[in-house]
Length: 405
Image 1 (spheres, one colour):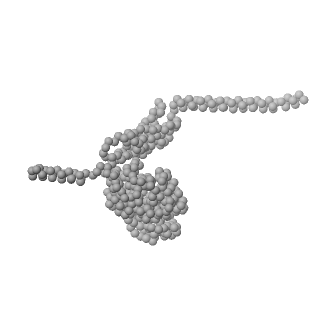
Image 2 (cartoon, rainbow, N blue to C red; image 1 turned 135 degrees about the vertical axis):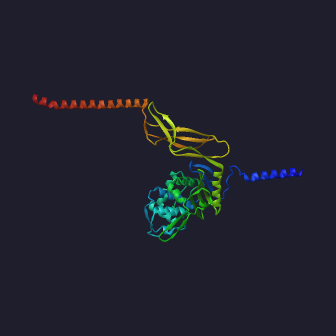
Image 3 (cartoon, one colour; image 1 turned 90 degrees about the vertical axis):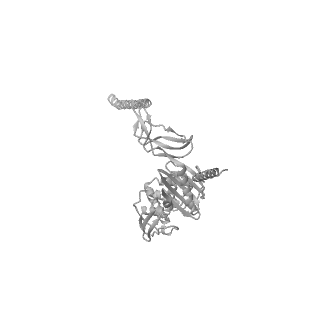
């Protein structure tokens, strides 16, 4: 081999090695240390990746996500809460609330989410539920409504108790719902919050380190107990795409790398396809010669699809029977989406305006009902006349007898 050929061969080998080093494996599966995990597209509810998604585990302080969104939705954030004797005695991270201290519900939510304060979470529960036990029952009911069917909450702060558990998928559902609330998002995005409590004044530093270290990170909550180990729910947005990662049962710094690997997997390998926008007209139904019913999307719907490979996205309408009056906003069906023949989600279709349907069937039904009512009315009148005739005959008989006598 000549010197020129030798150098050309070396150059080609170096080029191949360089390309291999620069090329990221397509759709490389995450390798996590945590016991359970879910990567979710919160816009569609689509699970992008999962590991032991339904395994029941201790949640630790990510419990406070549900506590906080319930407090926000109560509409009482400006209420003044008087702290009872219980919050100051709670274990773990605190903002050192004192008995009788008066503080707004909003400040308690901020302390629970940003500083992970257990005393603040307990004060929220007692104010909204009367007792923590009552509030926990409401938490479970709300979780069920959100589709979190494999969770059971016994307290508002997340300290480990036997029977207090959740799953990675359930926490993804709860957190996805929570970050759709603007007030919640504003709080969990806050990195530093000045705190002026009765017994303690400080700057509360958000315990979610990914707000500083991960591009696009905008929430939501971390947790730790010896039983639960490290838990985290984190969301991030880049170029209009948002992903939500949940990790349960991780250890130390592995928690951050687990969450980062999940989010990287989403951003590097998937693209968001917007399929419907809120109030977009999806279909028009011709009800009769005079009436048409426009169906609009109840909310936005988007899908995360792999950036590579063939993808055939299809949709179909599934409509419900409607009466002769359709109210504005009434759900009359859904638009179902599928990818490569597999259903992946749906969006409700609602009536754009109220409309009254008059067709031949309705006219016939009205006529039959009218004839039936006329028959009933005629029978009542006939019976009334007969009764009146009988009364007149009975009333005239004594007079004739009297005259004859």
